[in-house]
Length: 109
Length: 115
Image 1: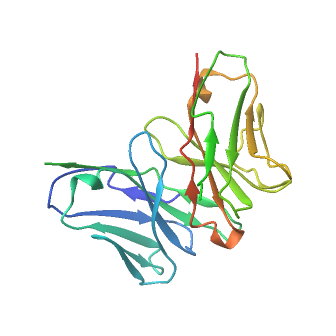
Image 2 (image 1 turned 180 degrees about the vertical axis):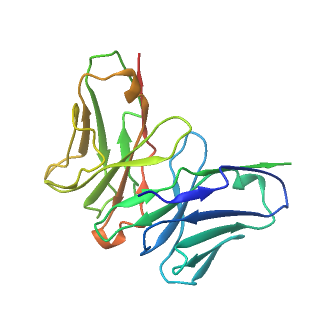
């Protein structure tokens, strides 16, 4: 069962903040986030392993609530370079990662 | 230190032909995963392989698609008798082991166009 991401798309001005949510109907072992620019490969951003854990990458941070089976990605003071499609992935101990349908973020000057 | 290498980057085939996509994992990685991405859609898991073994092929269509990862050489995703619906980007990812499968390094993808 793939995770569900919301919203599907976000349009921001430079300097604005955004939140992307990822939820699963199954118990989560870990959540990982990737960013994909148009026509390029997805690039790993971060992984969250424990309930309540938060991590950061530049001005991008994420939280993972194991009980609620949810993760959120926070982008603060957005830059033009943040534009792309963000995917959350969930991992099963069978060695397979399943991805959400993605959230397309567009940052305008 | 080369990353995951995929070739060809772009492939055009006519309906009914065969497509072969190749993936060389990162050095030291022995686990390979194939994902398909249709235009404007997400990454759909196809198959997970280790050297000489298919671990999980639950995402592979039952017909026309096959994958292998031989002892020597790259992993190959083979699509026989391609149809227009096979047009997509096919991404390969690798990890050093199963426990690291949630931190994937992706190749640049192979974009298949079926005419």
